[in-house]
Length: 158
Image 1 (tube, rainbow, N blue to C red):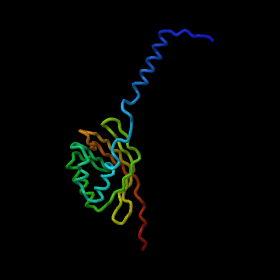
Image 2 (image 1 turned 180 degrees about the horizontal axis):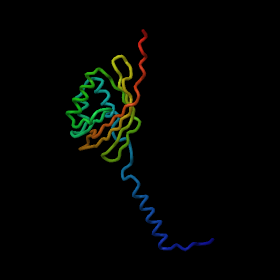
Image 3 (image 1 turned 180 degrees about the vertical axis):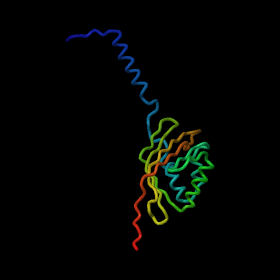
């Protein structure tokens, strides 16, 4: 068996590489962060017409970014914007594809649909929310929505 001498410079290089890899490892394991029932409560409250319950999910200085509009800043303004949507008579369907967090920060990502009173999809898209746990309570910091093409509605025949 042949042995290769280990040079101090080579040993230092291996050791520094191992330290760099260890630094890249997450300090807390990644896991579902936002309880699914809490995440789902946005959809339930909206479809029940409860803007107050939705506003309570947001941090006081949160932002809601919707397609084609300026960001809505602050819990009270978010409540007013959501109330306007509720009053329009639409309903929402919100899915979750990812719910990942580490420590007190999480993000949730997924598809959404806005359905009009006739059951047609008026808007569909995806969202990403950043959540932060403060004093044991999860709140939305930023909620960004991006719309895609709506469902085609058949043209009326003459």
